[in-house]
Length: 215
Image (tube, rainbow, N blue to C red; front, side, top):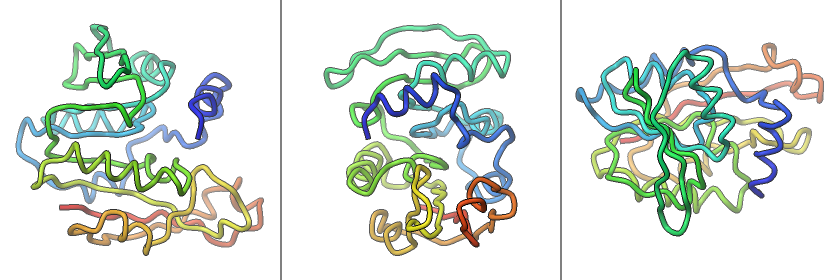
């Protein structure tokens, strides 16, 4: 998908994918990592889940294409940050280093991002934000950034894609398992159709969120 698609979404505040509260299943299933563990949150938006991760004693690194998301994240959570530019693979990232919590927010193209290997991963809205042709490159890039012993969560959505188009896209269990391969464990699912009127209005009878553990 073109960068302009996501920039337009943020500029027009069409961000139905954003959740105002910490994801309850995320809190329930996220693995206990050692204090100071580095956790990657790709395509993070302005997720409040990053606040929870930082409060657990982790070093949180979010990567997001939209500058609006970074600024809104700081403003809405009453945070400030030191800002600098960091060049990676011919891409200049705007780096927001939070002053109050151990959160660093990189604004730029995730496919150009590089860093010291991470101990943990949290993907609530990255894989499902990408069309089919970008999912494998995304997972390959994410794997390159994770230590061999890394643990974390991947959350997918599953619904009848013939009746509604993404994002979020429907990513089947089979595709998720094929993409991630290593030690992927199914933890549970949520049926959200009654809580998602925009999907129900399209004629869908099921809209599931699935939680997968890696590591």
